[in-house]
Length: 384
Image: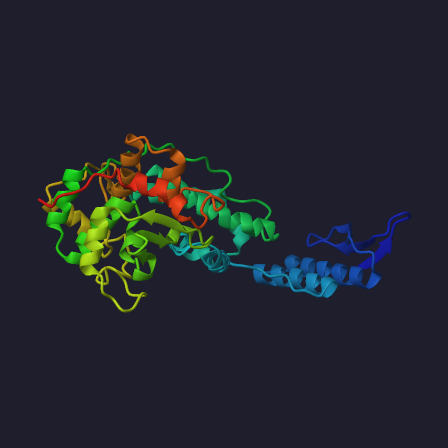
């Protein structure tokens, strides 16, 4: 029969009970209230009794601990399986991060849960660094680059750090893994001649518009494909939009219209609905994957006779092919063209969106002049 007592000079009650091996022991309940101390002591004694008979399951142990916490604090203790925790954490991140970031986090979480198999149903505390390393090894075997694997481990590490902060685990199993070394594939840029060839190979007016827009703005593929007329001010000759990557902060980019792009937009203007998409046949589609917009753009490159300069997956593996030339090369080209013409880093940051929120304010006509001058140095393109 368990009992409780207080030692001289100590405010805490001591639980005296018999362990599962029959040995008597004493342990502080860390409770100053006698009634709460009894709750803790009785629960310990009952758990040891069941353990001694071999009938204490993990679920029962969790229930015992939860009941102790609830009776002493008034709040139940929540236990999470690995999958439950990762799904809850992901849902929270999707509310506070951009859509693109939420999707990339979700991709990693889905693959990690799938890799764990039945272990995903275990309590989160059961996951070890071996599980995380095994996941990373599987990603490497699937042909993922070192950079992609490091990013995946970083997502898992962040999720487990959140669990540690909430007291669900004492150690982060992803902390033990060092980053893999990796060699980045340096992006090249499209020349004006190559861009003209791409325009000539474009299968539709919308694709021609998307290519021109990216060449003269450096905007990312998703942002270009989903651009709306409400972002275009033909009278002021400006483009004003919030990139998906900075949607959470609401940071806007203002880009003066290059004469070539202005001329093209005038040929397709006339929409009564300002919320209409500029390139309606491409809007709403994903950018990556076999069904994404990157795939048809690769076919346009092939038709234009432009080699991607691909660096494929390691021998004997499957995975992504890393291209030196891709749609993102327009972004590099936009920045490089201004750099080569002596445009300051500050102006280039404003135009590409790599600027602080403080720098990204509404611009007066006078403040737009340096931006307009910077965009004007982008070479014109003539369709082959």
